[in-house]
Image 1: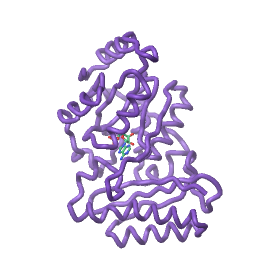
Image 2: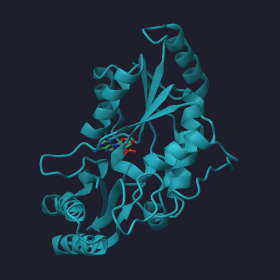
Image 3: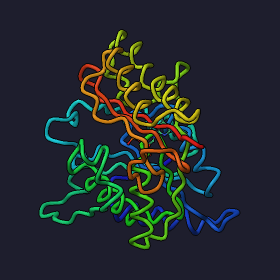
Image 4: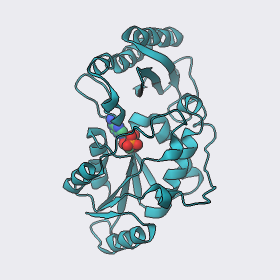
Length: 284
Ligand code: AMP
């Protein structure tokens, strides 16, 4: 596996992969990450290996998607261990630029996706999705992959990227990968590393609240009542504040007050200093 930090070298290395051929004519998959890899990332990597001949993974802790009071400085950085993991998983290129390469002096362009990025995390974290859309557009332009894989764990991010890729004709097929969970149901996340033992135990209330609310809604219960019950469950477990618990259209993410088709239940809340998010499909 090559570890590359400059755009020109990346372009040359990707061109070599494309020429190297393979059953699909040398197709390339991209898995963008912020590192501190866990089982969720590995699921993306394995799916990527099935989807294309060659895998490029990126690690970049993107400053523009963190708010001023968020955890950019604290975010776990473990590049050496991550590189070993990626190498073992058959990754061809680890694209690991530094901030100066991604945002050279004078960088002034930002991509914003209206609609789907405005509610939920978009409302709770102003500027977050513009940071995500900008960095993902740059990664797509740098690597020019045939497919790119993103986790359903960050469901709104996936919806924003699908919109972005379609609207700007980016020519990249977007694949969403189901959320990977710990045995007690908690979605795997690099931010779980922040949780104390006690918080980690309490955190299981988040998937439980969603499963129970989804079940109540599926069984014909009132949506507002199910969402209120989920909030109560989270508060009782020690979550505060709760940014949102909402039932939304799975594509546009507009709020739904009744279950009249496929829907997604999404939640975000803080446990101590750690902000956790999760979501579930709800089918009628
Ligand atoms: P991150 O490094 O947190 O930016 O995540 C990189 C990619 O991995 C994103 O597409 C995430 O949605 C995805 N991801 C993170 N955690 C999980 C998980 N538990 N299951 C599936 N995908 C995940």
